[in-house]
Length: 179
Image (cartoon, rainbow, N blue to C red; front, side, top):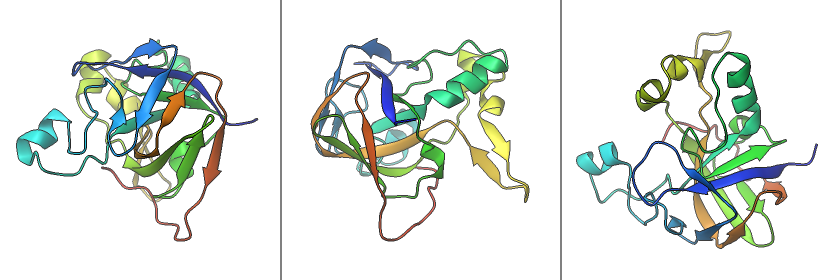
């Protein structure tokens, strides 16, 4: 299966879910134009409270549609954008990619992966039990975070549902860590 964009979304306010759009515009070094998390410094409210001068490593949130299908199979009616992602993908194992992987999306946009989304209690406020559903354990007992990946915009451009995604792996293969 070819990796592609299923849905795109944004929200001008700090709401949990993102409203699906016909397209979004990625802006280099900032994120999604018009989204509450757009900017060079951190926008996540708890991180702003700790240190508002931190660089924004969470400019864009991507979730694989395969996770949403898994959640639906477990009784959670979750559609694209509802757990806060800007881009919902299909056909790419986002969680298996190393840090600093570059995703070329559509005609011109590119996102560099910075880390994993750390599932927070807002997931349970949205749907009770959802936080536990996006956490798992590896055979050795390590926590597996399945709530998507975060990235920064390295090349701007329009992103639309149906756009193809190409993966460019970094020379050094470091695992994604929570950001």
